[in-house]
Length: 314
Image (cartoon, rainbow, N blue to C red; front, side):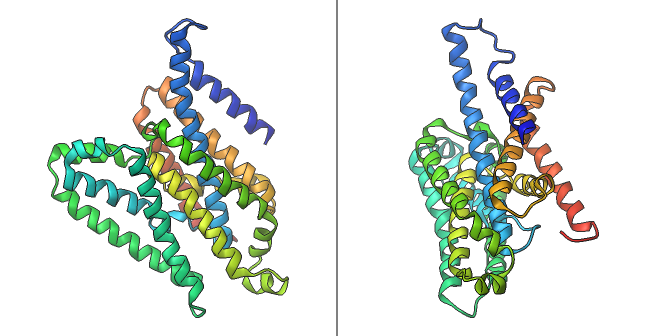
């Protein structure tokens, strides 16, 4: 963890100060540094959201190959932006980069999750697997609807939409931070405060109930916090399907413990180092900024396949 902190500090310094064309200490230098710092803040938010949400989601579902994206957050994000271009055109998508649109996306994503969770909570015969299957069906339906609308777009509109569909910290607008940062900090603080109960939930429903923990109530609370974190991350920068899975898997490996008080910080540091390191290397060494998210998804997807195909316990 100490090594990750050092790497994170080095990458932050590199992202802010490396290859700055203006002399150090001048007003122009600090303006460029401030603009770059906005991207660093976006990386911090995304790493924190993806890491904490994925670890907690895998604990509640008792499955280390599932990620919160299975609930349809990213499909809803794609559907919202596709519908915006379909009905309002490419100009409408650019004009929709407002605080109101950001809050509307958050409300829709969290609302979709709460509908599933309330159904799970109200019906005693329902179970976690049924909820996950419903989430998959909703995500598939939204994906099909988005594909249909995309086929009806003009080539220029489709090109603009495709650029927005790639997860990138450049999609983050600093005007969203006053809403995004407090939501994330409150959700993460509540999740970390509940770490000991998450340790018990990881033992399974029967063991948790025998130990005096209300499995259903704490599972619902955790899933609501997960939905808030994933909604903020997706609405802020776009889809990053395998980032959370990658950092969660590495966090389990490096911490070698089941205590969430250590897994959460390790996963967050890993997520931030991966994001900041990838952007620094691709921006300043290979000058290929647009492929950062593609490489992260590729590495995360390969890690997912390795975990699926390897023998032994997950």
